[in-house]
Amino acid sequence: MTDPVPIAVSAHGFSWTAAGAWATFLVLLSALGVLVRMIGPWKKQTTDAEDKLRTDLMARVEILEKKLEHKDAIHAAERALDRHKIRNLNQCLDAVLMILETAPEKTVEVVGKVRVMREAQLKAEAAEAAAIHAAEIAASGGE
Image 1 (cartoon, rainbow, N blue to C red):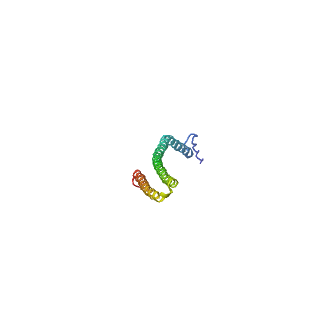
Image 2 (image 1 turned 60 degrees about the vertical axis):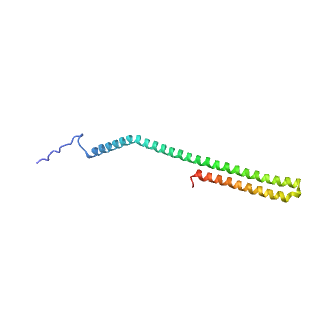
Image 3 (image 1 turned 120 degrees about the horizontal axis):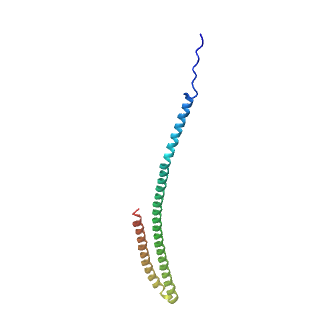
């Protein structure tokens, strides 16, 4: 008996290699489609994150500016108090020097008056310092 003639598969027939290649192509094409569709949401997410960061930073800057203004006001008040103290000391020193130059025999009497004047000045300075401190506490919310 003769051998049966093998049946030839045509050149356009089915092969697993070609099917795998087509499947891989379709998977890559769909992945590329997903990536293209995700570009918009990714940009929006990035923009939203940048907007939130900008908003948070601006709020923080506003808080810091308010604190800086508060510190500047306190500093100005303290400087004014220091200038007042220096003027008071100069006034007392000038009074003592003037009395020593004009009437040295009244030195004891003048020194007593200058001491009384100085005590009144110290009380006034303490009251001013307390007012500044109370304003600091009130402005900071009692912290």
